[in-house]
Length: 419
Image (cartoon, rainbow, N blue to C red; front, side, top):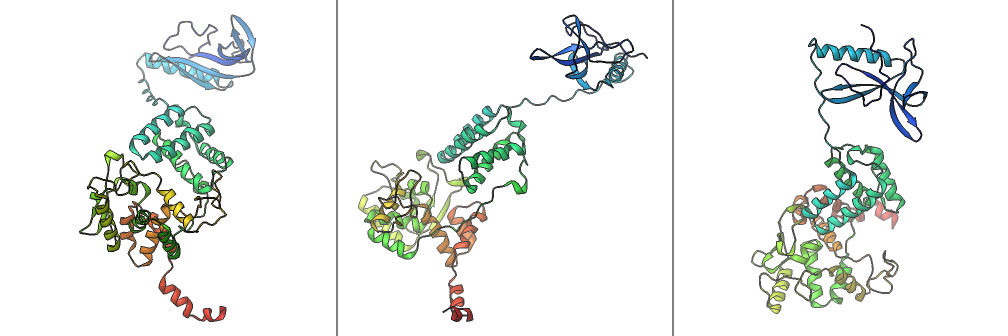
């Protein structure tokens, strides 16, 4: 069967089911467009095309064959050497389908529409705002809405590759973010990409390397000095945080009905009226020392509190957001400031209650480390802390100084040699 002759007609001319057009994508002025190919008399192609009725030579661009299938235009790129042969084969195939000699090929499934990166970020942040803590939403918003938008250069989120993640990391480093912070932000970005089908983008060696530090704890002499310098209300707050290991939000929202004075424990429960839900959505019970229970009982009686009242409210009876500053003010009065550190806002601990060595969450570190040191098994401590993953609790094992270990070190031969 002779090869079909390429048509030298504009692309808007009538097209038939068995007709195959040979075209070339060329540049006319500053615009790329398709034009019909004009072959030589011997059938060879020498980059001649018809533009607005005139034959021109265009060496740039690529050749294509074009046909219609099920009412849709189909177009495939071909080399100049194979263009005529490819057009012949496609024409034979289309005629065979038309005459019922062979079955028509199954249509390829339509790909799902892609999502613009901005729309993907907006939708994910709406989900986080409804499902996570406000603080988590703020962190995610900075990571995605500020950092990722600035570094991601592609239009669609489904086009994300490993290089895009590496570019994001580089952007974070250029802004002066530390490796541990970058690690956390990469996890957030990968969650977004995975939600849109782009999983497994990172290789093992791509992750930021950082030093997993030993969690800082308060020494006994520091705690005693702080309790001595604190008012009675401040001391009750600090001792509660130390005895319960509660997180900041958990302390703010604990109510008197959460404290079981008979069984000496305190519960972490959801408080919809305070917009509080336990981390990992898990309620838990933590035992409290008898001395702390008695201290809390006196506080409740003195205040005439009802079961629904907050244990540590602010002056308006609402959750107190300034508890971390209570720790810093007490540390300053106890003359514990290091007088060397400066906060990111330029506040010097030599001039006020700004020492970065004293903060609320450090009591939680102390709670976990001391219980493990005293022999409480790690699974129990995990439950008290409300950790979903045991690895989160295992980090406190690094800071344990075993009493047995100290005794063995001092009684060994090496101790005598270094004395």
